[in-house]
Length: 172
Image (spheres, rainbow, N blue to C red):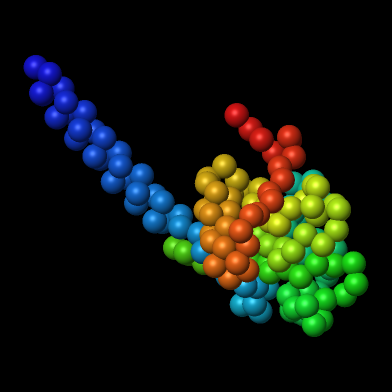
């Protein structure tokens, strides 16, 4: 009797795992740098936050404060190099979190190359990220953070990374 129950449970678990991994593959997130290709989606991304009464878009590198997409792309380019960064800013790389299955932008993540001031060292950290309201609680932020940590290790050669989280963002 025990063997039969075990086999039935194994079949159920096998089915669950196959279904689970198919869902993960369908919702796999890749990090891409913003380009002109994503302009319409990024306008929609901003509008969705505003409709959700969110005037600050986390990790948007000021996209929430700008109205011209091309100017925002230029700003990102300027902020990605030690040669062109303005005073009081830190060099950073901004990525879009894009669903691989349909190329939909679901989030943004901003990786600061250095912690150049007390605010970054004590509060903000190396990585900031956000997910569009309709795509939250689907595991996208976890995937994005995992890839961002690999970028920090492999591209920036950081040995330690500071990440901060507001109490309001922790849900049990």
